[in-house]
Amino acid sequence: MVFQIGSSKAPGSDGFTALFFQQYWDVVGHDVCVAVQSFFRSGHLLRAFNHTWLTLIPKVPNVESCAQLRPIGLCQVFYKIISKILATRLGDILPKVISTYQNGFIKDRSIVDNVIISEEVMNYLTNKHGGKERFMALKLDMENAYDRIEWPYLFRVMEKLGFDPRLIALVHTCLSTTTFSVLLNGSSYGYFHPSRGLRQGDPLSPLLLLL
Image (spheres, rainbow, N blue to C red):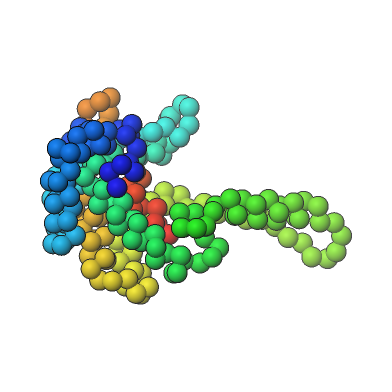
């Protein structure tokens, strides 16, 4: 998993990039593996490993409000290793429980299929003439979708879908031990615990959003 993480990705709050772990894997690899295995055996994760910097990326050229900023979480590499392992496990299960109409982030499915279908539908609506039937296209957007995820609801959905309680517990640990600081002009400010939502920048988040 370490070598699947982009080496040029911005570092988390510990200051270590994936490139460091990749270059010195023969030195740190054993200890990292032991720590990761300990998490999956015990289900415990130190909050220090899950502390995340939030960097604010402008959505528009001239920002006038916080709503025009996208918060991206800079997770530590150690946490990303754990998250990617869990994401891989979830990735094998989701095709069996997620509707075939949902193609984004699902293994062996492509979002391109949805784009093609949308283009075909719009082409049909544009060129349809005559007849008594009238149609309209409605586009819905989930505003701040990641921020609105309620954890108790998410865990309840996972239970209803038949996920192993141990897997649910591991996901719960990943979410509940999260802490944030906001990164501004190279310095971090504040320290707070979220009570809901998913981090953009966490490999696990897109898959949990689908549930």
